[in-house]
Length: 90
Image (cartoon, rainbow, N blue to C red; front, side, top):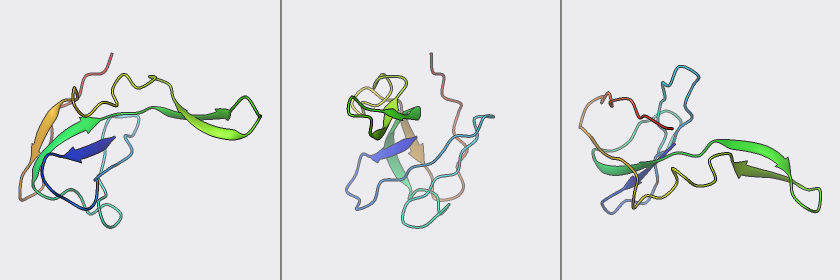
């Protein structure tokens, strides 16, 4: 998952979602969370495969369905630890 800031920021927070749906975000350092502010949240389910030339590559199983920040869910991260509502993906 990636949090796309809706404000000016150098880094883009991202994280891996576990099987139970929980995640921890990293921005400038591992597991440092995300700065307070508004974000669009996108998701990709990446898998490794081979391209037409046989080279290893990653591809999004959802084919970009949840990867557009313009249509993604919006969230606000507060100044202290924030628990977000679950995201429902088809």
